Amino acid sequence: MKLVSVNIGLPRSLKWRGATFETGIFKQPVSGRIALRQTNLDGDRQADLSVHGGTNKAVYGYPTEHYEYWRNELPGVELEWGAFGENFTTSGLLETEVCVGDRYQIGSALIVVTTPRQPCFKLAAKFNRDDMIQRFLHSGRSGYYFSVAQAAERSPPGTSSDFSRGWIRPSRLLRWSISTHRLRRTLTCWKERYECSRCRRAGVHAFRRVWMSPAD
Image (cartoon, rainbow, N blue to C red):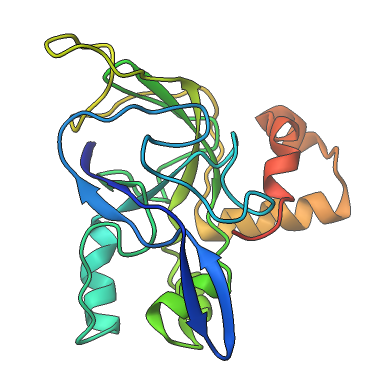
């Protein structure tokens, strides 16, 4: 599993359907080393921390494998790494394999999978398509958020205490898939009964606030 691109961006104003709002969905690839903090990457910010960002959604990952699908679905649309607002463009890390609680080490940084993405209207605004949210959800290609268990701070040249592009080394802690069909089953489970035995066994109760949080 490989980290292909690191992408960052600051919030900007976007006008769509007669409304003007701030969004941090526009990301651009960066090269070299960059510091990862508890809530974001250096040079990256989220526009509305009430619904995305923060410690549970510090970094958003999206697989390179999905780009070919979207190029076929959205002909004529230029799709560079970061096009879906992701901070980490990954390879070999699909939603059908990733589990909530999985930990990955990138250099000295340690990140933890917390939740799939629940897209909001800003994704539709970025692509200027009313059907983009429905397309995104139905595709099963949601991507996933990470929290930061161990930050990687900037260091003098020649040291290895902060992270850059490289291979991701997994160490599985919880086996709870965040693929689309299991996400739906989990959300239904929470609505019916917050403390069901299956959720307790999987340790999902620790992620209750994450799963029930609003869309990004």
